[in-house]
Image 1 (cartoon, helix red, strand yellow):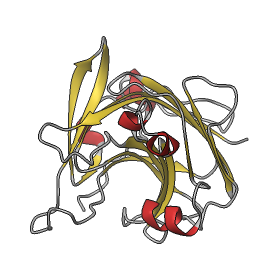
Image 2: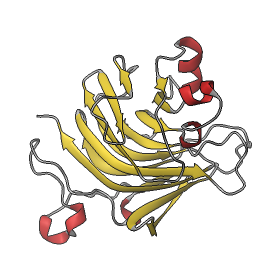
Image 3: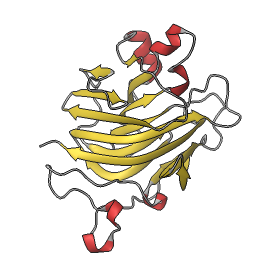
Image 4: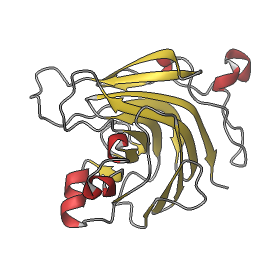
Length: 233
């Protein structure tokens, strides 16, 4: 992986979007702005205008030499250390051009990402499942994972229905999400709902502390905006 580019610096040297919270009681301004400050793992990142706002666009790619059906880790890491607290963002995802019919526009946020970029927890959405005619697909609209030990297919096989749930989604539309993390418990809120759509009472041993990352699948065209973090008090 490439050297990490720190977002934290003297306030005088940073644009307003990059000034981080100076105490655990403050919420950071948006952590997104310059794509060159992201550490990219099997993704490309560009700054674009999408549906009326400034955004980061991510497209996934497979590692060189990887087979077409091989899983790939596709994240853009932000050098912001996170243990417990609240992560908020607006996200949008659709299947990329030419994607397989199994693509769902997978898009989400990873947290407690370790130094290797391989271990983390994440919540993500499958936007095209949200309004599918198949009820079983709808039941798989939101997902929690803890990589690499507990990918989605292991969780679905060993704990059916526990680590995923339904929520109404429109593919490609800006979707506000909020992730609340307190020690071993994490909750996902979607579309400004007061109640979580997915509650995880056992986070399957992700790192105790790590960075935050934008998360997508290899066949996703995704946009991210208004990423903010409020550390736990």
